[in-house]
Amino acid sequence: MGWFFKKKSADEEEDKPVRPERTQEEKKDLLGPPVPELGSDTPEEPIGEASIADPATAEPEAAPEQLDMLPETKPLEPRSEGEYRVYVGTYAKYNNGDLKGEWVALDDFADAEEFDEYIKQLHSDEEDPEFMYQDQEGFPKGMVSETSIDESFWEWKDMEEGDRNMLGAYREGVDAEGTLKDAQDAYSGSAESDRAFAEEWVDSMGGLSEVGQQTLEKHFDWDSFASELAMDYSGVEYEGETYYFHG
Image 1 (cartoon, rainbow, N blue to C red):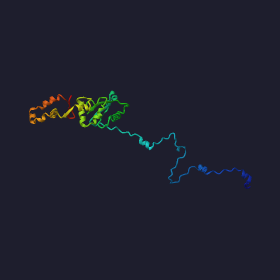
Image 2 (tube, helix red, strand yellow; image 1 turned 120 degrees about the vertical axis):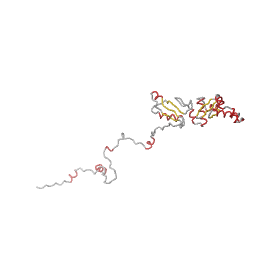
Image 3 (tube, rainbow, N blue to C red; image 1 turned 90 degrees about the vertical axis):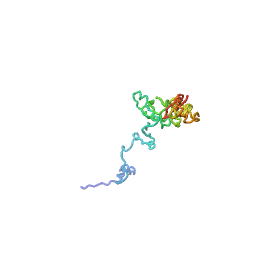
Image 4 (cartoon, helix red, strand yellow; image 1 turned 120 degrees about the horizontal axis):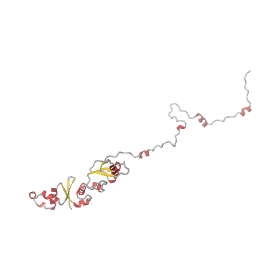
């Protein structure tokens, strides 16, 4: 006996449920992302949760202008060569048996503030260093102590050479706290020796201008006179010359 199929009636066809047509978006979701063609330059994007960055853990990138603002760390340039030098240590190091410090020349510093900033960097291993000037070279007497550098040094350093040497000699041999005016008021000249000073002094008095040079050389004892005259002045040897101050 052969198989046969019974044709359904129109009523049976109407009772069959009809599936609705899918939209284009639903079809794309079922198919997934398109597969790039071979040779395409379009990079393949990762699929899944691993490709999504977590804003809570992502590190922000520094803006270019912020990178430019970052301070540069430069080594401290040695400034030990010069005419006026101090050896700068600290009391904290000294009290711990450490004489570590450095010679610093003050010649090129504009003022005390610039010098202080430099030596703070020199001893930056201490939070609030108390500086100790353990030795000094080239300064007139009274301008440097163990604890400080006299403020007058910065003015004296920038004086004309003649005034600087005169005040340096005055503070070295007459008054360690004297001012430029004090030195100028007491200044009586400078010479290479007492005899040279005596000759200049007599000449300035007008006494020798009327006496012949031969008579002077025959009868006047310059060395004896110079020694006696020098007793009335303070003679201070400074920078290869002797400065004379009265009073």
